[in-house]
Image (cartoon, rainbow, N blue to C red; front, side, top):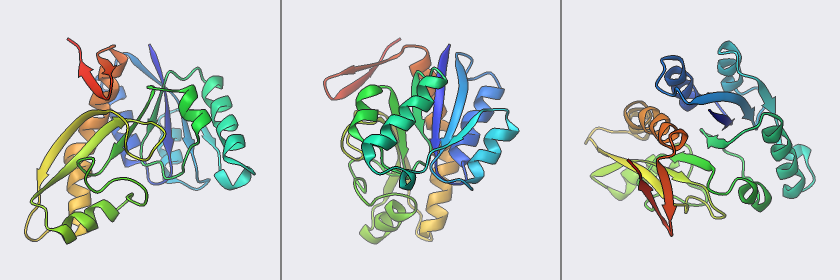
Length: 208
């Protein structure tokens, strides 16, 4: 059984997608061990509570340095025997100590086709705004492993979506969440829990 620790910052729609797939048996080799929020009032905590998942809140500003913040996050994850860390709309930055501790065991979902519209400053609705400003015809979402830079880790999977002429950043964001992110993230978690993801250099191979 793979123990999952989910990092959240806001409403927790991606967290809810994971909770739903665990409830229906799709994530049968996973245990949702803990949900950790970077914000005390995040609605994601309420979602976790309703599902009976233990919750913790670790606020970056409460710690004098990123090293102390990492130390606390690691303590929480170790306390729940977390095997895989899932960033599901997590807007706080973690440091090198945390990433090193969970090397190749942290996955993130990003609302664009990395490397397009990714990196520092590209979060929330911003990737969708930039995609529309640039005039792309196709966008999508990416699930990737987290490394020491922003959105540069090995890509696990991507899925595309056509941009409509009447799309706004809000409609595009919603469609990508509902039609791609909520499906892609649980799928990546399932593959990891089944031992079907292997990193070779900068690439992720899907094993049968």
